[in-house]
Image: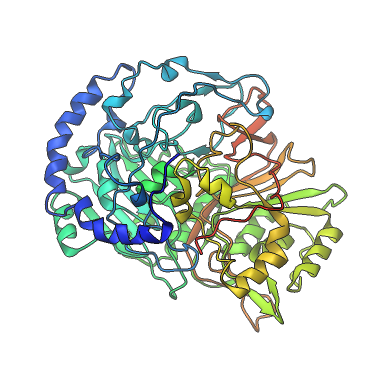
Length: 599
């Protein structure tokens, strides 16, 4: 585990003072060009002849072992749910770490029989040291008889060479490093542009392929950087319209178009920064390659329709162009739901096909899939695992209403009580009447301190409960009692020591987590900017949303939805696995545990 060396407050000083020497705008493109030929030769020397080098050729591999520990920080250091993003490009942090010596793949108790892992990919004689792990696009693969999880984890690069924790994982090279990638649309919160460019295949400069960024700010550090980058790459840079300073463009999505006409949609939890890619737990959903044609399935039509309507909310020329591209594709293979948030005043209720966003969309998706809880004889568990807990959405005479306790939990029931009054007592009464247990996973101070990157990875977590009266009231009334740890004993998930940036929401079948009713993964944190909140004087019929968010929800289908750890597969063909980076049921906080805070 890394030693911090310096206190947290000093990190920002290091970032500002060292920004210029990390990526000098006048030199890095030339140096990248010179490094490309060497990198191709190294990739060709790998011992896996069956592996294509398509995804392993970037502009230039970054040396990510040359900076001090204090520089390991994402530029996504502000509260994503509450602030305009900071400057989005620049710093290349250090992610060096000691190599793990463990080759043991620990399976989950839910995995049934042992998962078969390709031993060749765990072999110690792989020449991975010839190319930084940052650009790897091959990891051990499990072989289960049943289906694979549609939720994947990004690879853990905090401990290079630790393949046992990277079974079935995805790398950024898998997503954007392919030789046949023709055009890519990148929706994100924070982007370190020079880092991103190193993952692209050289065809992007040779053939003038297109890169479109849609963020809340520019991806260029300066006019000089913009001119230097555009001399080599065909990049467009669009800013999503934001209604106020508390709003953010928090969506993390890629739409990739390939030379053969196929397209792939990627919805994930990761910013495009080095800390996010290498030092935090991240999750990914991939649509798989989509071909042009009509969509024939109900689930595919819903997903397509919701995605097109979400894109239309931007009102940008680049998103209008993307709509004209995406609408031509066949979404029939997609069997999950899209839950989006977009700025504006929106309806709270409507028919199964009405255009809804935020918590109203969440409710609509649950309802039209038959997932609302109607039978309260069994005790259900309702879980939120997030990386930011923002300001409560209402406060009355010292009593507060939180997004999780007073909006999200009540709407999961068929009998939706919208009038749960602020404070702890009314929320506890609601739990008794509807027979459920809320669980809120947020890392403890110890979880972060013991992580592979130590306390510096806590820059990705936001909960200001220590120095704010209103936040403290929220913590005491609606948060503290329900908190659960991120890390558990042992090495079950392979992410116990990797600070989270994932966001999971889930409900079990009233069977203590043996099976899942649904799971949602994406960008939504616990904030009124993300989920929306009832607009005053509308009798609860209208809601106000400030931010852009995007998540995917997997509904329980004919097959049993089952949490799995350490791999994407199960031995039981009758179950549908969902990869979890934490264990359920989660472990409650102990008496001396405190949630992480940068305050």
